[in-house]
Image (cartoon, rainbow, N blue to C red):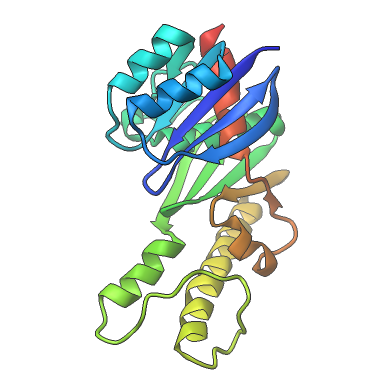
Length: 242
């Protein structure tokens, strides 16, 4: 049985997913990004292949450990991909966005795909039926919006996200949740509708750690997949690690 470890170093959390013979097995959050932590994971899983997607400044020793213990690939704009990337400055595209669109074309070949990632920011990522990643848009994510309302006002508290709140908030907490989460939900639905008006045969997929807060408030045609980014990383690993 061949094991692949897919590492995702995001702005908020460091995670890794385990695949065995191409099948997703588990996802875990790392306590830190120290080389010692990576070494323990390598010893535990004995991976044949590893891949790293990072949008932060991480310890370079991590890459050395992974390269010495497995077939290792670091995802960049120069990686072999099943999609073409926008002209201009492809080196500025986030590794997480590349992984999402690669997962979309792997799962939905021959279709237009809009992939929405819910992380520190919301990313809208469009790849057409010819596997051309054309770009999309970026806006503030849930935690960023809740923190902004707290930090840029004198009296508004910082509230924890929760999916269960009324349309008409009855206190400060529910007012903040209704504004932030319903506002984002309508933004997601609205942008998806705009794409659907322009492109027939469109698949819309949603992923990311904040996804559970939004699922009850979105239109049913949006497909949710909590492991989409990791499925994309695995597909890219297979392309680049042989």
